[in-house]
Structures are given as C-alpha cells and as structure tokens.
Image (cartoon, rainbow, N blue to C red):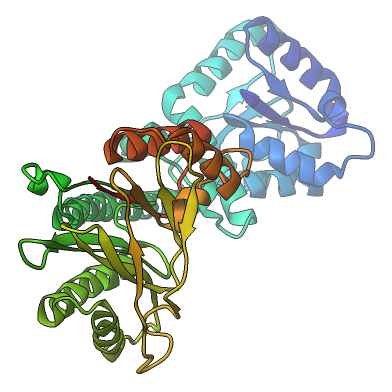
Length: 453
C-alpha cells in the first residue's frame, strides 16, 4: 500500500523522477508506473488497483497531463472512490483547462527550482493531513471493493475490532477529506448487520443450549437410581446412560410390581436428538403404565405398549426394547425382546459368557397388533444379566474404528468373577471411554445390569 500515487504525462517524467526521489528521502512510499507495473500485467487494472490502495492521489499538472486521456481516466477513478486529491503544478497551464475536480483545490507549485524543498514539504504535509483517517479510508475502500467484486461475500465483511474501528472512524470523519464513498458506507453497514445477526444467533444458540441442558437434567432425572433398592438383599442393579447429544433416545426403567417382583426394561428409539428424546420419554411412560396394569404378564405389556406408542407416531419412529420381570424369590426371569440386542449372561466361576436368546419380535411401532411371546430364564445365584444399547458396541474412536462386540465380549469374559453389577457396569463404561479417548459420541449408550443373589 503506497502513500502516494503519481499521475503524470510521459513528457514530465524527469520532474516526476525528481519528485519521487524527494518523497522517498522523506520516507514516503510512491507508486509510479515505470517501476511498479510487472511484465505482461493488464496495465490499466493494475493502475486502478494502485489508485484504490494509495493514501493520496497526486496529479502532476502540465499541459500534457491535462491533454492526456490516460491521466483523465486515472483522475476519474480517484474521484469515483473519493481519494484524497493533491494537484502539483510542474508547468504553467490555464486554470480553465484543468478538470473541475482539481480546479477548486489548493495547488502546490513546483515551477521555481529554488523552491523545490519548500514545495515538497507542503506536499508531504498535505499527504499527512488527517493521516489516520486517510489510512482508514483507504483500507475500507480496498476491502469494500473486494467485497463488491466477490458478489458481496459474507466472509469478507468486517468483524470485531475492525468493525468497531471502522464505525468509529466514519462517525468521527465529519468534514474531513476524503469523504466516505457510498460503497464504503454500504460495506460497513452490511458488516454491522451481519455482526448483529450473528450476535442474535449466538444468543439464541446459548439460550437453546441452556434449554437443552435443562432438558438433559430433566430427562436424566426421570431415570431411576439403583439406590432405591439399597435395602434389597435378593438383587442389585447398575444403570448408566450417556446421550450422544444434550438429550438422547435411550430409555430404561425398573420398579416393583409387588414385594417380590421387579419389572425392568431398556430401549432405544430410532434417530437421535430432541425428537428421539421426546419419543423416548413418552414411550417410557406408556410402557410403565402398561406394566402396572398388566402385572406379571410381560407379553401383554409389550402388546399394549406397541399399540399405545404407535397411536401418535407422526414421525414413524420405532423402539427396540427388552423388557423382563424378575421373581426375586426364585430367580425366574420372564422376558420379551422387541428387536433389541440379546442380553449377555455372566454366570460367574468357570461357566462361559452366553446370550439371552429367544422370545424375539419386531421393534415397537413396526407391526400393528403383533402378538409378542414371552421367554423364561432361570437365573443362578450371583449370575448377572447385562443389557446394553447399541451405542456401546458402536462407540467410535477418532480413527473411525468402532468398539465392537468382540472387544466387549473379551472384557465380559474377564469380568465373570466380578462381585456385583456396579463392578461390571463401571468396567464397561471405563473401557469404552478409554477406547473412544474423547472422540465425539455418535450414538446414545446405556448400560443396565441386574444381579440375582
């Protein structure tokens, strides 16, 4: 960015070279076409760009420059962009022949060689007048032109301190020369409009984040804690859920049907985020309501839940679910599986880890009036039933690798001698967390573990 653009006629080149050397000695950078134009460069475009980026436009007045078409084009471009115009007279001309944009300005005369140094100081003084404003004017002009030439791209707008400085400079410009152009004002206004819009969006996002965080607390607060059964000696539970986003579509619940029977279920709603979480909350309430009505018939619970949840399902979501009833006296576990991952059985001692298979049906809300059938499994003392949503095995690390069923099953084999469900659940959660190493979650992950004593 030059301090001065020198517009002149070729006949006056000797004088312009003298002026150029004088300005450079006074630490003022100049733009002159004999040294700034590159070979094969589109010369007029380069000249226009140099005019736009210079702090001041110095027109060397002489009979030849007044008659020069190129000099007139340069002057017109400077006038169009409200550049600071400084007329310098190197040879006598009639004032009536001088372009109107220069005619009314104070001319600086270099006619007498003895006065060259004095005239040069006047020129430098004119260049430096309100220099901070002139520099801001130039900076705004070059950026505004770039913005206009790139279809007013938002990424080129001013932001933060740059915008604040530009607005303050425009407010303080008053009657200073050069006056702001219409394009500069439009550019600054567009920048302010974008900044205001972005601020509103950030405020809305912050408000939404706060509401979602509150929704997360509410949702997590609806899940029971195993501590409600702290006095129960016949069984113990572990439960943990982590939504992939602020709220999630996993659900679980456990509650007594009577003094001796425990109802539990775990499920996963299709999709993610707020819609899934709302559907999960409604599904959880409807399943529990059906369970409390139907008592010990888990198949009837599934059939009624399927009908009720599907009743108002405009988004065509579905729920994979595993529900079961434990008889705490005998260890008998009656269950139904609606498209859910079969549970793992950790029998303890030297027996192998196995899966709770059978009693399968489609996810809820897939087939109307489907008749689910229950299965029955006799738990052994100390045996643990491990129920996991697919977000556990599908957890992904930063390299794109999933945690996987093989890794999980290897871990479970090593946990067969675990003393309680908390030891198993915490080990699974710890191992998945170590594997993902802070990578963003792609799905909700829930762990529910039941141990019958």
